[in-house]
Image 1 (cartoon, rainbow, N blue to C red):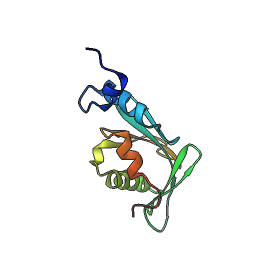
Image 2: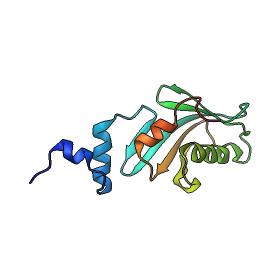
Image 3: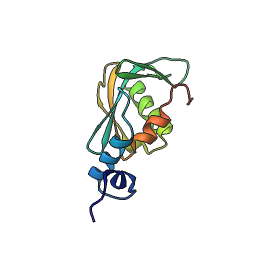
Image 4: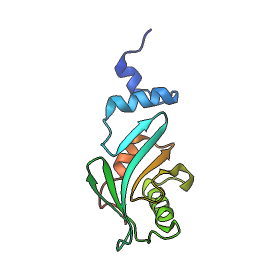
Length: 128
């Protein structure tokens, strides 16, 4: 018996391709988050030397992230990775800076998390 698209979307188990299809069917991703294969790419604009770590507002196709560390010797990059891992409740190794090591505009790869979980946890102002 052939599955309908609704049955396929509701299935909890399956391959990575099936999971990607299922979540695209249920939700569209915000402009700052892109899925490619089983990796999510988060586009951020980092504000270093902020009073505290904080998820800010959406700025066009980027999510503003405030980081208390100064942009010296990769301190802000390390703080960004640690903060995102904390906010997303995942291991530090699941969060990887892939572009923008010396810029405020960065792309962060997120491995092994469902898009819905990432979107829920990146609600602005929700985490300190």
